Image (tube, rainbow, N blue to C red; front, top):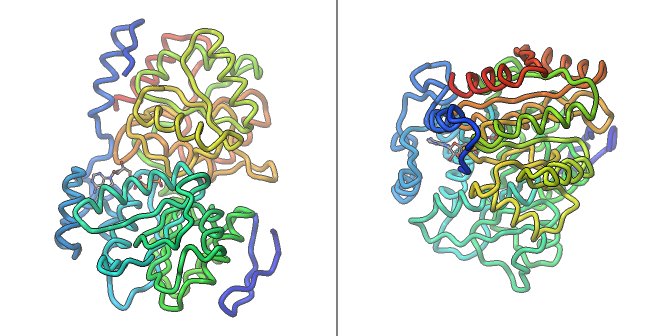
Length: 443
Ligand SMILES: Nc1ncnc2c1ncn2[C@@H]1O[C@H](COP(=O)(O)OP(=O)(O)OP(=O)(O)O)[C@@H](O)[C@H]1O
């Protein structure tokens, strides 16, 4: 889609495309318990993304929403919630482009805004929220349902193979993926004339990726003129930011510099493997560490995910793979069992890189270093992948596997982009590996 001209709202736009217990070793069991309670990111530190001076009451939320969030054990807002909510809730509504580090509570910021804008006495769609994958859309829907527990909200899930709407939707809030929402609108099942707020989560991805971008844009053009446009992500690369500003004209912006994006609680490592086979051997040797909490292993290709899962399973390890080639039903089952902690190790592609929030995930392995569609190192995807751990101040470890000069250079390019530290871990000393990673999860 590079250089392609898009017409939107009268503008011509340039779119750039692009606890299963570990029985082997008592120490590991001990660490697991510590990992679960340890908060790395001190909320007392004014520089922490979790720091705030205000309470939720001071942010002007309805008492029914306050009851919902207190039930979820949210005691104080995070920085992005404290900063964004007053801007998002102000009248007349203003658009928003909001950025904050992974796992710092962006979802609550936009969900609470949508819920605050809805008139529950009017049974017609008033808010649409889109995410890039069915897994993320389902997760947002769960958050919506929890937060809206004390309201009269009716919500509709718009993901493939889910709730086949045949009649006109009368739910107040729609959460879905762009493809399904486009379909519902074109079949005239989803009326959009009363939509007051349109949210894109993982907005940079939603606007940049071929297909998703086209659909998001098309839906955007159908929104009423007065509709509030809200874009959130941990990353807004320059090429997407300019477009975002046109997508959400006059928006309030909360932004971060590249160097501010990495989360302090996520320690980053790399292991210098000799070959592809050696990568697999190292992965297997890490299994007992991977199951201390839960882990996600990211690979580049769907086939690789399946192959590794098969090989590990054949060796007696309990792992599952999840990727976009699978049936929706299977994806949901795998995801639900990982979310419940029944499965501990998930091998996946970038489909799971963004937004997925499972607090028990304390290790992420980049089995393949992320690259973009042109084969170039992809810092944004890297940041989202490692952000699946270290959620809301928890500790986490991420380990990059490199196996040749090229993968090493890719990792270095990503490291330079963020100006972060990625520490080398030896591959030939299991005890030392365990010590380093366990230390990372403790500190
Ligand atoms: N104020 C709060 N107090 C306690 N926990 C919170 C608060 N806000 C959010 N959380 C929890 O923090 C976790 C991370 O939040 P969320 O998934 O919204 O992060 P995010 O900023 O959207 O991350 P990502 O960029 O990875 O999508 C969730 O489990 C959420 O329930």
